[in-house]
Image (cartoon, rainbow, N blue to C red; front, side, top):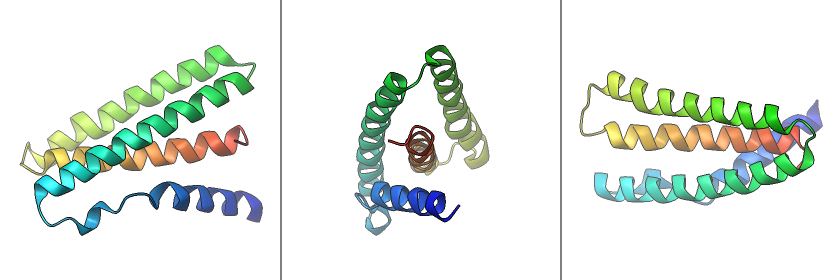
Length: 116
């Protein structure tokens, strides 16, 4: 149990350490930083997913689960965030923050499940 917690925490910290978008001074800077963070996380997730796909014999199930996760991410970070923020100027920033959080969680999950 301690080993799992340590792996999850160390994975999360190694992922989250590369960008700190909370220190930006303007909304434009924040969006630019978050865009870059999401792009980097997307690349990391794709690489980890490919390794997980190669490692599993349940390829169809993993592919289906990944598609369902992507649909969830779009719903959670798109539709829900827009409704919650009522389309305010901050909507893009909230959407990118939401994506960043979910990408980080998915990366940690796949790393732990497939011992990557």
